[in-house]
Length: 279
Image (cartoon, rainbow, N blue to C red; front, side):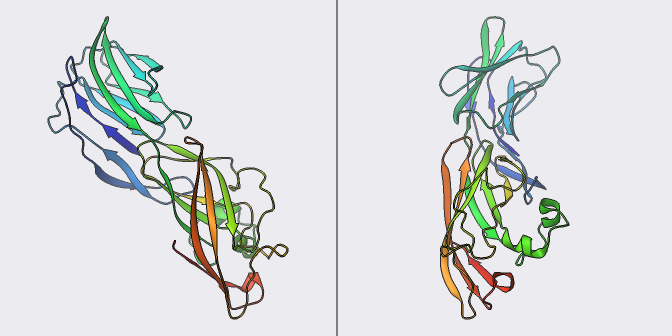
């Protein structure tokens, strides 16, 4: 996914114009399709600019140079003013990349184009993720999700019925990674303690900017009732609320969303009708 800001300047920063366009649909690992590219360009763009485009694509910061640019080096400066990295620019090269990953500090980054001892162009770009929980779903209500791919074809529907997927969107301008998935409240199988991430088969899942990803659980939150704490199913229906919590790697904070839930139609969870309502 791409989030970028472009700025044109031969020797100093003259003007910055920003716009946002949404184009393409692309599938993502463990996730549903979303915008493949979001770009922001200067309305007066041409091949004479030095820093034609600065963009975050996935977990990489990409700098595109004008064809006539005389640039020997690019410096990427972190929000705290320290140098993030330097790239030498060979003659004729028009694209340079900095891998920022998911361990960067959010904030305003500056790109400096250097020729000799002089900075010939400079632009800035805010790189900051923003995760939000969009939805929660179960196998029994969403059989078309890639359950076999995630959990394996040998798993029974009873096992799949115990797990859940959580849909997460990154509305920010930089990549992030989810490193924890937790359930609290009125779910039948409340884990007394969590070991590991709570994500099935992995310790983290990267969520690029403007992407929508499905996280799959590993803790059987909708399995058979565990002890006296979890909410069970009943013929007439039990109603409650549960909270989904994810942990962001970049910000280090937790994001939570609460959903309503009804368990009805049976005394057993394997035959229970589970309806989850939006927050």
